[in-house]
Length: 78
Image (cartoon, rainbow, N blue to C red; front, side, top):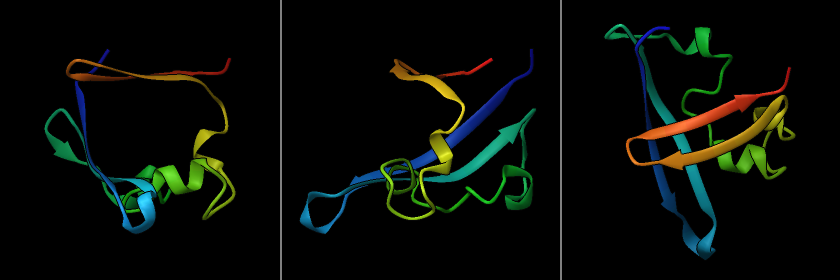
């Protein structure tokens, strides 16, 4: 196990379209470079996941995703 944090900007744009942008990921307090995150840092993750943008690549391999108080719980496929 290790300690990591992610910071997202989530909002609803013009026309009611939701978006979520990954602003930063830190591991042990150190910010990870965009290149280490597969190019998803700064991208509209909801747009990608819903088929707009880069073809839904963000949700490939993800079994479940839920939000709990203080946590985003992500379960990946085996």
